[in-house]
Length: 568
Image (cartoon, rainbow, N blue to C red; front, side):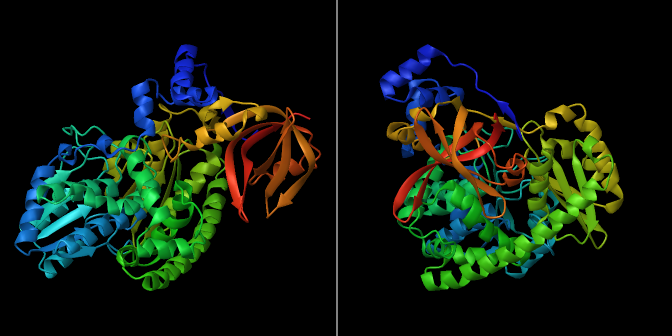
């Protein structure tokens, strides 16, 4: 086994039976819902309903009324409005939503996305100076700005108003903007804290439409962009996000905007059902790539074009830059692993902190994620260029990397983010001090024995339980994502039928049988483990997810194995 299997606790039989009786669920599906804290019939009805009535009132967000009033004045008076965003998929979708909508409302609107290499992350003085040169009087930040205290003050000194539209964690001091919209503000009464940046931008647009007397539900045509940004940013797909993503996926699959239609074509997903997984592993990386390698404004041009042909042209650029990004990513990952494992004490480190001259700043976040997955501990990768270190950190459940950096902010120039991901700027002489301080602090919160990766299992099943009704009930739990992952099952004593086949470089395919039922199974990156047994394996225990695979017009069921134990 690669992982420690966390098996599910027993559930209240009375609650399970009640869900089975009232909702006609398979008992296992009822158990999964209860384990995910969806207990009551009210909870269940809300979980399975995508009614717009369950969306929260945008005016419950802090300062929303102030933001709408100021934005309406700018539109009415013909002021120059600038949408100032981030360069990742959440940022470019946020920018695209407001830029496109305000333009169609007759606004004199432009957008600005900082260059990762020249401006760094978030709102910058250089970006504000450029806004002043454009005669901008109102800046709307999206997916950034909540920690831009000095930058907002500078903008105000130049007679520019600022509306902050963000979803990241605020610091103790809040920027003195005209309006600050963030559900995570301490005084916020908004019922849901986990909107992505594009979700907050969508809410601002919804409130604006209502405020100026338009049908606020006209904004629903932007939900394809909201689904992209929300899925890409890996925020929990629960509550309001679940509704926004589901309705957005419906648009992506039925009538996506021309730019997204062309991107779907370029990714080879035409005539396939687009899911959150397709967004995370196909669409979003291409939108992210231009922000990592060159200029993210190309992604906004793609998402706002009315021409499919122009979209194809831009999509091919994004695709090419994504391939370049992958090559840089792979080289940086190899160098990071070599650097880490050359340290004889690396296995004792609870937090991985690595720094090197001239690593590509566009991939340090991706490589941090890969290091975290490989070693199952939080990772921070820092690129040092021109005497300044720029880093990106990724963390796992149970360790708040944002809070950890907040405790060491005296060692940092700037930092921002949330509990699972953060970015920072640091002077090179403070890197070792930061690594030591983070590891000393982590000793109070983490144990090296906890670094063994674990797999949470939703339910134990036998293969003869898997029928059409069972698969239908599983599918109804989608869209999947953080907070509502695809159900993970465990089955014991599965017989291997026929020979085990190696496919690709390191993947294994086989057929497994239990109680007379045979199901195809695939195990990615398991070749080395199974070859240790010379592929002479007859019985397995498996942890897996169930997937329906469509190929050549036919649909087949497949187990995607996440871990296994060889019994004989």
